[in-house]
Length: 289
Image (tube, rainbow, N blue to C red; front, side, top):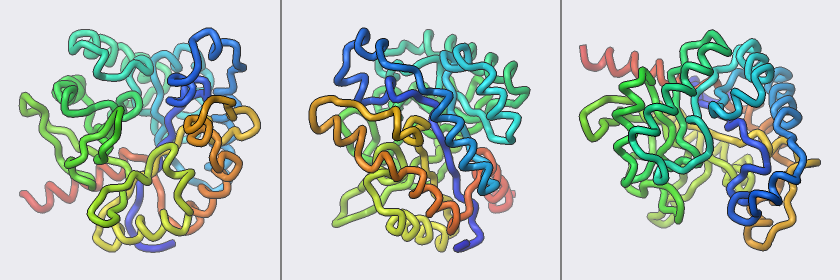
C-alpha cells in the first residue's frame, strides 16, 4: 500500500429509488412502485469490506434508521462508524434552521440508541451545505458533532462551494462554532476543479487515476476522502430507464463499482472518517500547544 496516510472511506446508505437521478426524473408514485433493495445493496458492501478487513463510515438518515434498525445495528456491530445524514433527503435549502436543529438532534439520538456509538459526523443530503445554508454549521457543532462532510468544493447546479478548501481543514460557522470539514477528493485540470471522490464521479474515473490523485495528496501528508452510495453496489437491481443524461449518470459503469473499490482498497489505506479527523485534531494540537 502506498504511503502511511490513512484515507477516509464513506458510504451513504441510500436506495437507488432515492438517488438524485430517480428523484429528478421519476414521480413519487413511480418510485414507490420500484422494489426496495436497500438491505441487499448494503449487505453487498459489508461483505466486500469484510473480505478486505476494511472499516468505513456509513452515513445514515433518521428515516432509514426507522426503516432498517437491524441493518444499522449489523453495520455498527461489524465495527463501522455510523454518522448522521440528517432526518431524510430534504435538501438543506428547503429546511429552516429551527426544523433542521430539531430533526438533526432527533436523528442523532436515534442512531446513538441503535448503535451505542457516539455520533460525531454529519453529511447533509446530497452535499447541500452551500453558501446559502452555512447557518447549519453552528447548529451541527452545537449538537455535539465533531466533523462535517457536506461541502463539495466544486461548482455544480445543485450543490458545492467552488472556492472552498479542497483538503481537510478547520471550519468556522457564521456564529464562530468550530468543526473539522472533510471534503471529497477533487482534481485540478487546466485551473478547474473536477469532482472525483463522490457519487457518481467515482464510477466515471478510472481506478488508476483515483489512486494517482490519492497518492499525490498522501505525499503531501493529506488524507483523501472517497464516498460511494450503497445502491451502486447492487448492479442487478439499481439500473433505471430514465431520459438521458440521467440514465447515463445512474447506470454508467454500475457493474464495475465492486471491481473499482477492490482495486483501490488493495493499494490504498482506508479507515472511517472519524479516525482521519481524530488524527487531524491531534496534529493541530501538536502544532498549537
